Length: 520
Image 1 (tube, one colour):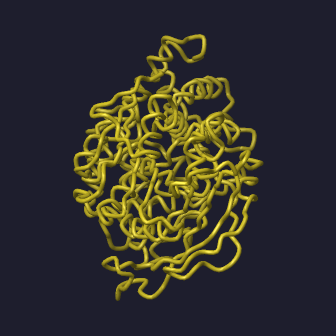
Image 2 (tube, rainbow, N blue to C red; image 1 turned 90 degrees about the vertical axis):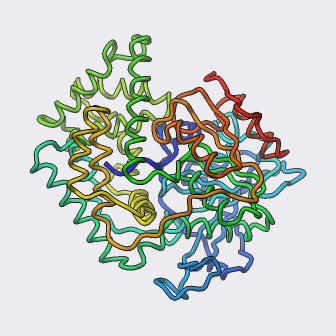
Image 3 (cartoon, rainbow, N blue to C red; image 1 turned 120 degrees about the horizontal axis):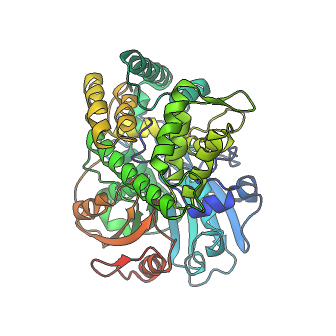
């Protein structure tokens, strides 16, 4: 399993705007016109309504979209832009999109967005969030005071994208048995990850560590300067919380306000983080099964949803259902349909329907859910979401287990987290077999920063709630805001959360200590 600890955040707005997908869809990439501004130079902005047209079919009412590109050092060295290591003297291009309301007044500055991943497009996310509260986007109180600025981090989408995994290998990886029990099957998954690692190493060599989080956090300061803000106002989801926390440690005096929603605990290593997520998904799945039992009218696999899902995966191991196009819904694809559906509470009914239809011989809904997670198009092409996801995640990791240790953890976690534990264990093989050096991010206090709001959801599968307090504590200036809800990330899904975050972004009013918001 690809490491989901920092996976793509599931915005409600994306579900509404992308034909029912539970995760943001990835439209074909459009390069912005013109050359990137040189490092430190002011960028040239141009109108780019076509980005919203490609993603959504139209732009948001009363919104203008402008795009630009900036150049950043490939290797920031010690932060001064000078280095003698890999990439010295070379640059990456960072793509920016600015959504500005025609009703803007009393402008505060720019609200810089990162959706997570790593691998998620901030350009896309800025478009989604520009559509306003009627579509699950940002409140007008925010969009009328800030420019909404999304950027694709280095290696992602439009920003010097890293692309080194063939579509066939991604199909094989997602379709593989999530719990390969026989030694032959396990060895096959090891070999697949070795092949993927070799391919990326052959293509990028000693440049691979340059996609690390600390390098991207330094890029973010270049984004701050490019939009003309003395201090950064930032909204980061999921992996974006790690990116924001890293920024706060590097540039605490340049922080105006940071909202970190769906917190990653930076002090967890690969093994601890993977186990934490296995626990989080198992808990979220338990919440789904209880909902199913209590809502049989909306859950066709009631009363025992766990048994129905487990049976579907087991059947897919020996006799996968074939779709109209000949594609087989193997155990891996069924498993990723489950993963995808747990990112939002609205996905629960979709999962129940997909499993029910699969049992009736129709895998279309399973594929739709799984493909939305994987970033797979109908023609079998993939975005570079998971290429970037691996490049960043594996560059960040200072330590990794051995193949033997992964095999042992697969068995141990199967006992503790039956559905998700084995997959999270064998998912670590991706970084075990990844080539190139490592560039771990800092894990300390953001001394000198103003208060930072860290938002956590009690039912979050991908960034379990326990990580919220851990991140706030590490930063030393974190203030926890809790949503007693389901799914991955919270803002702006409920009035309570929205009001608290808006007050912080607009007026720098920090939520009260221990503030909790009800599910509804």
